[in-house]
Length: 86
Length: 468
Image 1: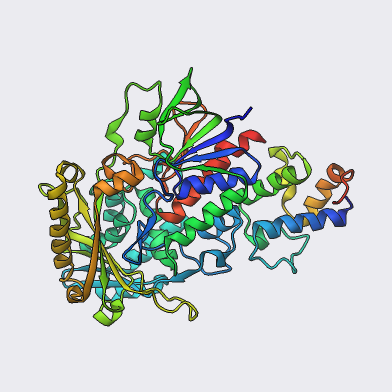
Image 2 (image 1 turned 30 degrees about the horizontal axis):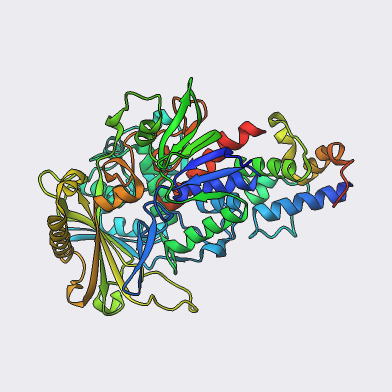
């Protein structure tokens, strides 16, 4: 997956977690917590969805990399580069 | 060969069990929800008699927040279960009250109404009320040691007028206090937020809409739901749950078990337990009378959503000393009096439901004939007691139904028919077995939203993380 595809995938997960949320004006550099009020349960969900969909494993002490869209994409890039977008 | 090995077995198809089931099935676990009864819901259920829909359990959903709210238990459960706000079709309350002799405090889903009522009726206490509000916002729930502090002690340190303390405690105890007389401060904070700071709402179609949404989602995700499947015992080997044996002898095995049966009741199911700590069992149970009116309740003068009343300056939160019921305090609720959308219109009939405190043992001792007679007698006595505090609607009543502690016991399997479960909660959900966990009422959260959040958080904490 390219960084742009990873970004789309994360957006898709976020829209599944929060279907009522308008994600069109999400700022990549700002934290999810700040913009969407995501809590620890939601971050666990992002991790679980990535595992469910792509078998990507994220150790608990690396959850902090998921703080914003920008940090998430750059953290996931090496882990997901060999995954072919379905 | 068919396999009966599950990742997780959940005992009880109430709100918490179904919510936990959805979480686990969503993440591809093989999960089975076992329900003793022929229908789902536990205490929160519904039935149809004489062409009318009745709800039991739910008066109101607490923790109401408007569509778009990002914080609070309702927003959290919607995200966790992948529902949209509109799936629950929640209509906010019209307005409620706490009524004591010669004084009534009105409140709705905006805390400013309660605040201004207190400023009017208790002018010397309003600064203290504001202090309580700021403390509540800072309170960090879910620490067991702080949770069990005495609420009466905390409030006694804040307020100088004991009547205001009683009036604040009345609705909060009615909607979620398993202890008699006093309340855990943790429970008080949860209830205060869920009722006064968030608020009441109800789907037009009642609790059935919520249950049907939950069960449909669970089944779509491949979860198994087995009705009429009471658990005879939890099979234990060396501190580990191996699975369960059902009342019909069927054995099911699982990696872990999540039980909503209650802490004492779950311990009793374990094949290794010889001593069960029954002191934790709650004592508070209720009767509920349902009156069907010949008109919308507001036409009979009853325009409130919920009225909590108490007939003296001291709130009576205790099981009846000598009789079947104690009707000095009660809750009246009309499912008609919510602000439903224009497309929904009004409910087909007028309903007023009234809950009174009852004594479990005395109701269970009655023979069939006495049981029927006492239901009628206490219907009359409770509605008579209510007539001191709300407009007398009795001449409009065209049909009635009453459920008792016996009914509650049958549907919840809680000892003593204790609606709010054990007096001591197990906030982390753990038990003496390394793979048996609790969810629901005895884990600490009550109410519909609370029960669902309990199922979600125990599933996350004990059944999903361990798989990571």
